[in-house]
Length: 222
Image (cartoon, rainbow, N blue to C red; front, side, top):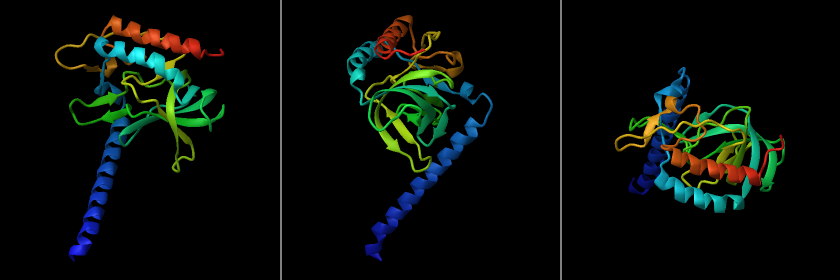
């Protein structure tokens, strides 16, 4: 019996993890089906002490990303287990192989997920809002993943930075919401119309300068 115990334990652990994943996915589904569910969540805001170093590093590194795309977002956010994604169609390939204009893809990031642990319940986004359907974005990514589930390619963002490297080609209004106490989280409904989640005007200027520099390198054809 003893020689079968490791295999039995492995199976038990696998089943437990599988059951946990199914339970979490159902929790995400139940929440997302509620009207205005995003208003129940909080988001983290970017502060100046992080933004300065991050924006400087991204300015140098993003043009060397393995994949650089201009995409038009086609669908709303989808919440999966420990990751969120959105569907988009490629409008222009600036860098990267294995991708074609007109191809539909999923975009996801290690920064994008629902966190429902109550500390607080939050929408983790890498300080960048959900992409708007019907709008074009500049996307910097690091690799492609083939999905057997959808038979579509998934593109993983260049996640070496705290800030998710996606930039809207439209000019967006952003409200800087000062943080209070020892938390950097604010209610999503207070920043729902933002492109970036920032805690000060100084932080906003840093991020918008980075966006402007990247859009100048890879301009829209409209």
